Length: 295
Ligand code: OGA
Ligand code: MN
Image (cartoon, rainbow, N blue to C red; front, top):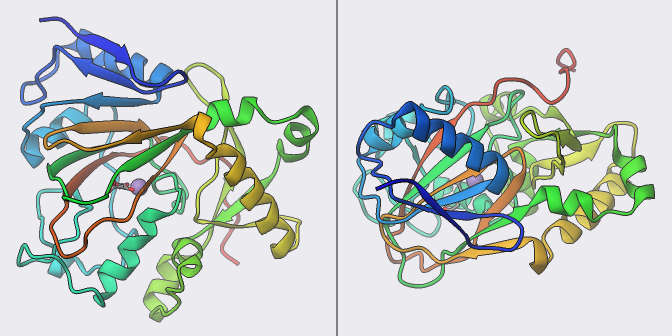
């Protein structure tokens, strides 16, 4: 059976069938998927009952694995999963939903805010591949926004105004927006802000995207309140329903998205019940802007 893609939204998002992700990919299929990613920005692969190893092997067709260090307050020693995938579940090492007041759980709620993965890293992520192992019974849809379409729809004055803006991104900004404010000295060091362009250009097709994320909390050369008002306005614009695809998960769906041209968020779900989602992350290959020396 050969690869087939059906469009799920007028602007972006394709559903890919005719491929088995438990098997190594042919060079042609890998190239076809990479090129479909450039175009669709989000691809759904339904009915892919895969192991963590198979998920990582599939992801590695598109680049290196991103080093997960510095992306969480969870201690590596307490990890539920040791296979190399990111644990995006609500589960503790015992396989049960984390207590409501658990610090890692509270930190992970940041995924409910619109973001682009690893925009808090000097070299942010390229692709993320999220596999649904256990679907939560209530809520937990994941939403994606097309940041190319959002950029295109800006008026010319705004495009000119923001073209060269540089933002500061930190995990403490997104978590801080939810009232998560207490960090150890080590975490403060780890979560120090990094710089990202506000407008980025896709390396394959050259379309521009609004590079927004809840991690963004400041813009160079602007007061913080003015920057945050602008970032809020742009985010509101970029996440209007016309630019958003809502995904209702079925077990064994795998969704792959391009963090360079989309944002995403998960909606609230029943925290007393499991939601087991696992993410393989493909590292980016360049910063969006030169980083300044620290401080
Ligand atoms: C992620 C993420 C959303 C979800 O894996 O990067 O934001 O639906 N996940 O769990
Ligand atoms: Mn994410």
